[in-house]
Picture: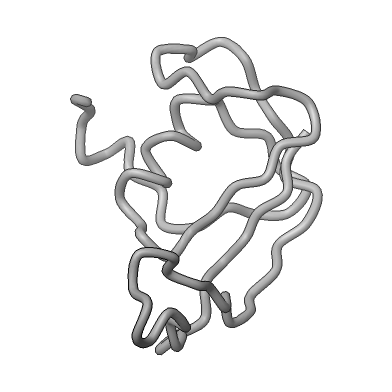
Length: 87
């Protein structure tokens, strides 16, 4: 995936619209970001024409289970992750 440094967004603003490409770059650059979409099943990074509006932002600890680790499957979150809900 190639893009310019000026295209990198650090965070999204609730109520604003962003292109699918911008959302993809945000995901690629930030490991602690998750995007939930109410309208599209797949973010195509090449799609620079379609825009989605951010309807909510949630900052919380994400609790996960690693099914490949039988001895200690619980992954303790060490920081909050950010989840954006878009439509």
